[in-house]
Image (cartoon, rainbow, N blue to C red; front, top):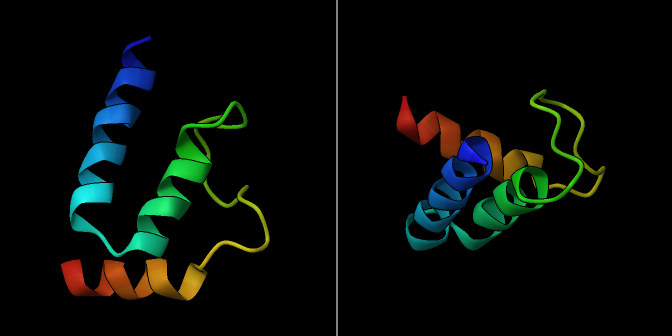
Length: 59
């Protein structure tokens, strides 16, 4: 319950502040039933380049 609530808050922040495709990727990979706490298991059509570009801006 706590983890799902934290993901919901994170998703709200992503929707408010991140590019739409990055926020959508976060929501698709964290809010669905398929989240297992590991990375790299997302769908093949995720906008990987947009996510990486967003991460580069943060560093």
